[in-house]
Length: 528
Image (cartoon, rainbow, N blue to C red; front, side, top):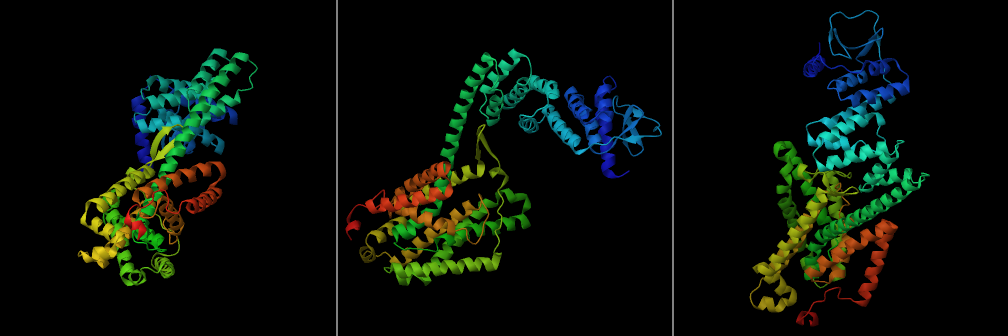
């Protein structure tokens, strides 16, 4: 006997030992399962599962795997040379002659899979019960009502109880008992799920006036909750997009906002950070698989360092010679961006690569029935806030920040008091490039990484910086959030393409009316 079959046999013996000889599956249901027509066999599957016998799962699994046979009107589970009576679980000493296989078609297999999933409602593991309760859906078979009620009577978890109560209401809504139907309608009215609205709409045309009134009342309650859920989802999506735009634009707020350099290669610095994260992920997978879930701890500083080094080299070799010549800087950095894209294609290929989320960033929080907050988006919002605080502290509370602000406001005076302005330029540009690398690290957690990754954010980054006010860190924050909310609101109303166009047109008109942006620079630096 092969290993897997031996393990299944041992499992069967263990289950039969737990079940004991005192209880048997319904012989009539088993007979229908083996010899009935297609509809009768599907109902028998649900009836056997609803009985809640410990051996129900084993019997149904045996049918699905082709291990059920009949000898006359007797139903057996046969594995190799061992056979058991399907009804009682007793071992059959001598295999009968003339046995026939009990065949399960695709429809019956589907019913078996649904019944096996429902049996998980009695599992001791909460996650298993929650998944089984969530999978019941609106097409639950009425024959499973005893099993669902049995699970509901034992369930103490509030979330699972709510799902089970909705499942029972789904069954009773289709019945003939008026009081039970009214109770089911009220139960569905307390739910906030789209499925509850679908079920209520299915009985909205009932001729009974009392049921009609209950349905309308429950529908209003469900629709109100769904509207609040959609609003919460839209709010979260706006904050999420705003945090991504903030990360992408923070580096540009330094290189363009403080230094006045139009860096068209900023998007490629974001791309370098994303590919650095991909490389670190692969190194962890190859050399430290047990610590894979913590690869981001190393990827974050690595992404910052790699982009910062490329940015410093870019400033030293090219941009340093082009200060005060914006057109030449724009053309030069655009050419560098093309070179960086081609270099990445040569090293990693033209196809996108996938960066995997750690376990602690997978899944999400079920805020409402129609709103799930993904953990990776939540972590990016927290990460963007942390980067913003560090940037503010660096620019306002450190010596380097003092030098950067001094050189920005009056380069000649800063040089006269001993500030090495060329070194400050390099460090400031490296800082902005490093922050772009952090943005790439974050973006790798919400989508695939490819050579064209940065191209999708360069225009948005410039819009954020210009809209917020050149040289204003606070303006960058407000602009990112405003544009994030505006994009998501317009997307829900008119689609992504129209939303982009409307936002761009708005920025153009806004800058014409207020060239200094939301927050204008104040002091002698403006007059210089």
